[in-house]
Image (tube, rainbow, N blue to C red; front, side, top):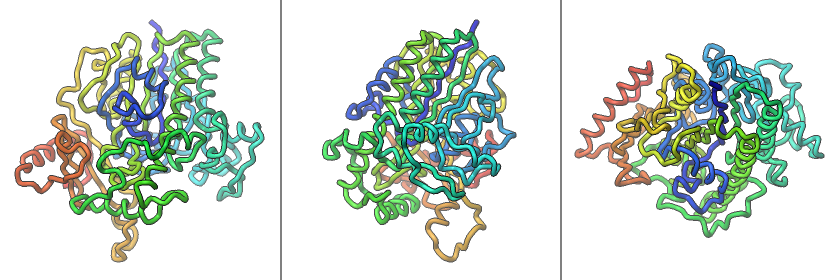
Length: 482
């Protein structure tokens, strides 16, 4: 029996509620809507850590950030930690297209024999000087089409800035480029009539900041639906971390955009939605190539993102916090024979790799931290009483820097958090470095009231703390969060 192909499409910084299947019909995503209608949609899915490199490493290795060691951005993945491509049976051809962010961005590696790159931002983190002579595939595509580099990198090379695509037609953006290249890979495999199954990981930058693109004007800022925390900074009961970041975004804005009023935030959110629609077009290109190749019934398609995006909720931008908008992600799985539906219950992205292994009919490695949810996809199992865990790990050691200066950024970088989102609907955020938080997501879905110190919630807080400590013991997590 031929093993299925696997196409893993993931975006960067796309919150769950940017699609109709998660309650947002305002954003134009016809291709993602089509995929959702054909998929098992996990209604409440969470990333492992709301930051690019840690989350990406967890998706590709099936281990928690504290286990694989990539706990901050621009950390190279250790050779001792195998990737999905190195764990799949040898019969699989593994291809990686797009953002890597785990070291040596433009160099084929870690079991992926087909490679297509589009980032120049991470040149300072290459492991060998000679790699600096290799420019990304996207760089060559732009030069071939008459564009000229607009930025000088630290090593003196002429490159393209991350926001360069703002003035480009859609076909020249990173999303469109990588969508076409992925479709070409699928077409070429079909044309060659190869019986070899493939694993294709397609990794888009959009809708990640800087939030500029050719579809900036697709959405009217004044007509955007927003919730009760939009453009409102956290109150006194919130963690210092959240209040500090909200103050900083208000003071500094973003890439020339002020972020002081609701109108300011609306303008940025409109741009963000434009990038989501840009991604949708690229997803459509990939889905069409699968259909044209006649391999829909032989291919598992997954759509997800590495983490969410606050985009003005609680007066915050980006991720790095434990609010739902930051840690909750879309997760769609279209699998041959699976009945399309929405699955309730909480699930972690750490379960993705063992799930894909089981769907591929290959043994699930014992060292993987998650568990297979293939039974949920096939309709023979439920999420039931499953809790989801999210980590936050410090970017610098506790003894780095001068603690006497009161430097907020340094204090921020030292923080460690562990979060449990329980099947009963409570979220507990534990830390030794800040104000702990407990939210009743059933009564307070927008996380406006921290009830951690409420006397009548003490039993709930203690019960969730015990569960979190049990998870830490099971996963050899030594973080001291209380």
